[in-house]
Length: 197
Image (cartoon, rainbow, N blue to C red; front, side, top):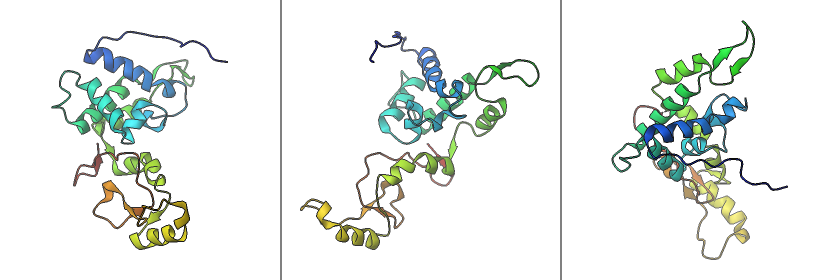
């Protein structure tokens, strides 16, 4: 049932080598026709980075800016990596006029769209990729409502727990709360632009 690993490769720590190998890996679900955008394949490092997992986001920054990790902007690194992946993943060759692509990839139209957006994701993409973040809260609503649910199910929580409502960190200015402390760090939202890093 268990076998040895399929392949092991040493990769030079230069930007070009790291980015090319990372893009190859993140494009595998595209080439397998499992999804049309690598951010949608939740079991990839890129999707984890888009969803806000700090270690994955730092990994992307390390790929894009391997010699300057401390100084580089994480949001810009994510956008630059998205541009890199889409540039590497464009569909190649077509058999006949209506035949399938010789090498499955991202459509030229989608690549143009991503390049027009400069690799940045909008608020809607952010929310969709963060659904797990919300659902980890188990109960979502106003402070009073979440605390009422907590009181109704008090026996399920430890004796040290005084109340139920936990504020969503990335929605600090709103009155939206969850029942659990969330385990995943949200991605940063740049103010005013509607873009997400």
